[in-house]
Image (cartoon, rainbow, N blue to C red; front, side):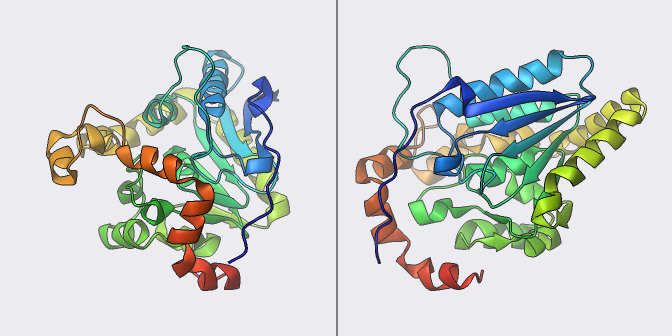
Length: 281
């Protein structure tokens, strides 16, 4: 296989996440398009800030989360370097729970890739609007580690969740709709317009009822163990079964970073090249 040409990766910036209020809803945009909005510490910090802005603004009744350029998010940035300071960086679990607990509805508007952590970020949103060319999937098994946030079993059935997690295949938009990962599939040039239409409808409805209905659905899942399942690595029984320490971060990510992106691509992804190049699942 031919390795991709090196690209210049922009340094972390305050513009890695953009925040804009439109009418009575907010648009939050992951803004690292050169690396398909791969999630690093900078995006995590800025996303936490943007969600807090939307929560505090009484004029904002709904939130749209999207990605700049060709992707929603290609997942965690395995080339990311540590932050240059000791300021706190929210974990994926903390960001997921911020969206989950957000009283206001959050709509994911997905173009291109929403895989790995991107798949999970779109999944934790209350609704997901996908472009016809959108691609979902939990690809972490290709990296030899499990999902950072275990949202997939709550979005689809157990057999479909196992197939998604155990095969690590790319899932086209229409299949994602069938599986329950998304609410609607629309042409790519209509994704934001559709998300904005949904946001306006939500903003026009009685807000107390919109928020209480979100809370009701969330509570049903919480009674089924949703919160504990999301943060599954903190479960001592699972940690023991996986041979890891529940108090330590996932060791596989450290190994993957040490191996490097090119080594990972060469040694782990060969099995999927034919299917991926032909656009098949």
